[in-house]
View: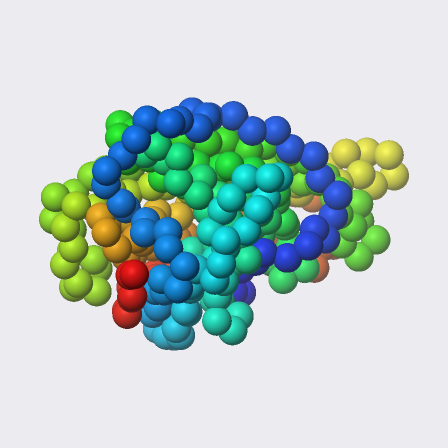
Length: 264
């Protein structure tokens, strides 16, 4: 099974959904620091390692300015098809800075199983806040979508949350690369999936955090390391007549390490 994101595949919705969001809101408090330089032609390449020892590379860059709901953003694109959660989350989406916050708008997707792609709309979702306290809630988006897998109608309830993590004067990435002035942000995706068979509702996936990802932002560079874990456990004791083409459980970890970058 491959990770396909949040933020994160940026593609059109495969199912209709409704959502609501809450959090700190935007701020105009200025910040002289730059934890994510947003200038056109900036780029970052990442080495992606999974638990099986496989390594691939992603290339993420800022392509141009774009308007989303009449607001200016920097549009991110990935060269080829990105594999990493972080690169996938920004690919074809917009990011802007407001005060000490970074706000993302667009569509993100995860695929906990190949037969269950889930895509979620975000609007000014806070992906970073410089002056946040550890564990401070930044943004939350909730919603419900409907999908059909084989003949089963699925109701998917989702919640995407971002929270501030710890700050580090000096940070050594697990691959040994040192960085200074690093701040972490945690992104959590919680899902609950149910279906109706013969008029009876069955919970297929009890509410659980299926994806937890930590991004490490370094001052004047951007994201230098991302650690992502995708795991789930389907409900036990489903009737024999319910046979979804989805593995009963999964547990996968992915590391994304900054390789080469260019900041204008």
